[in-house]
Amino acid sequence: MTRLIALTLLTLFSVSLLAGCNTMRGAGEDIQQGGQAIEEAAES
Image 1 (cartoon, one colour):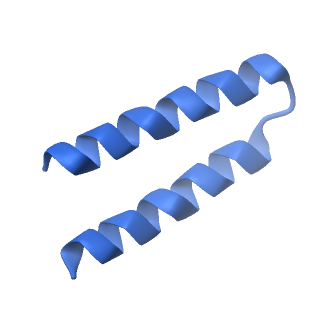
Image 2 (cartoon, helix red, strand yellow):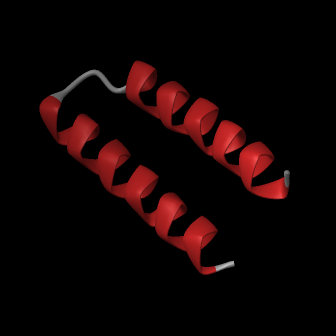
Image 3 (cartoon, helix red, strand yellow):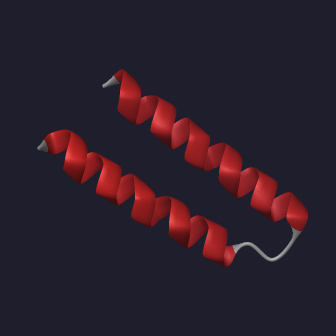
């Protein structure tokens, strides 16, 4: 259940980051941050 909540929050966070980027560089940074968040969630 906690994994589902974490995954939902992570998805919402990732979508908000991607929606906020205006340039390709910004998109790359947002995707990288999203990947780091997924990695951290998987480790815990």
